[in-house]
Amino acid sequence: MSLPEDYEEIRKVFEETYPNNVRGRDFEGYAAMYTEDALWMPPNAQERRGIPDILEGFSQMIDNKDIDPVFTAEEIEVINDLGYLIGISIANITPRDGSPSKQVKYRALWLMKKQDGVWKINRQIWIAQPL
Image 1 (cartoon, one colour):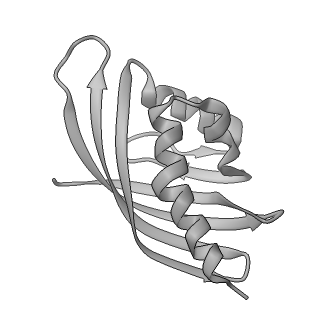
Image 2 (image 1 turned 90 degrees about the horizontal axis):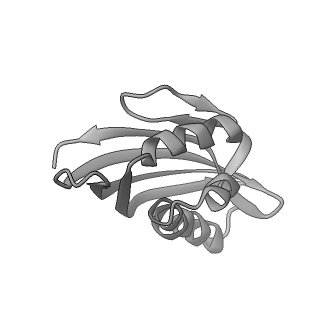
């Protein structure tokens, strides 16, 4: 049975925890958001499975750039210990070499799994969208 706090906890992972970990380049925090068998499917890049592989992809994603994302959840559904979220992210990307910054928009679909009372990302898919 899903509870209202489940929806809020999933929203918080998407809108607060995830962008804070990206913004802060926090590898430990980033890893803690995922299940052990998570699948990470970014646009125009290799998909990753499992936390060590996802961290390698995260490292490549933030290499030589700072990313300041804003995430907005649009739809959240929960069925027992599984849930999904659909949302958008608009991120300002600033290269560390002084190149011009750019803004990008992504559409995200996450499958969430509740483990030991904590909502974690089990499947993460995102695609680029026009601004």
